[in-house]
Length: 313
Image 1 (spheres, rainbow, N blue to C red):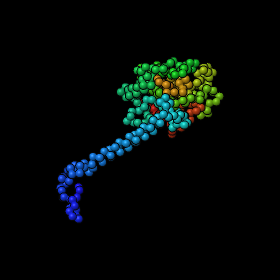
Image 2: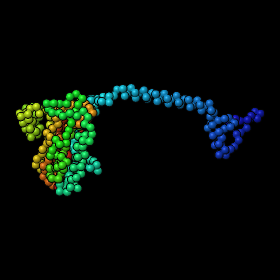
Image 3: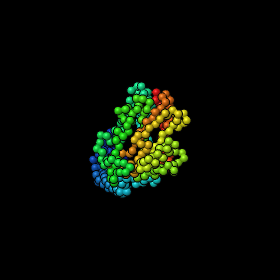
Image 4: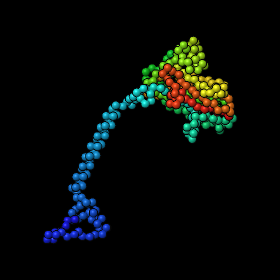
């Protein structure tokens, strides 16, 4: 408030109460100030911030525009060893335990009680329904074989019936001590497997059962050796003894004609059903591995293999 000059002195400001001072701060009729500033002062501040935030918005918009120009919606910018995922695919299994046991890998049920094993049947059915695009248009799908891989721009389909007897009609074997576990290889863009298709060059640590299978395929059907092989073994001698048998459907691995993954619409990664016949009432540790020359096995990093426990009461 302007002070009034009396002679050579200024009069002190008029003392006001809190409410009167607040009202005068909101609007001072003597100086035409609102909140301590005149209209022109507020206009200058408003104009400054409009220009400032407009420039800031334009700067970030330009940065993001340049950034998105470097990305491709169809494929990652960094692939294989240049990316975080790397070039060594992991192996997964289904069905998974309930979410309440998110860190568990134990498949445990009582085969004589339907309400006990029904969860595993429903979870497996849900996985297959999603994985095979059962209720969706199978876009770009063609029937594939070792002699007829998919043409450019097309992908191979997966039929749930190919996993028989691991089907929902058979409760995926959970009503008896023969449960079906489904294995899947994680997708890595543009990854091409280097196949073991010669029985003379197989690694020493490969299971003998798989070596013999590859040898037989090479002799009888050499055109069907283009497979990322799969093996499932008990981890300890006791586990090996408690696994009476295991069967692989539709084959003992993932066919090469499903690779590479190119993010084509409708792509379905291959899966393998492994039906175990096991001793009841015993906890069995099982490790499954995928086999190719460019797949390394590392349990701690979950590369190329997967571990789970199986117990049937």
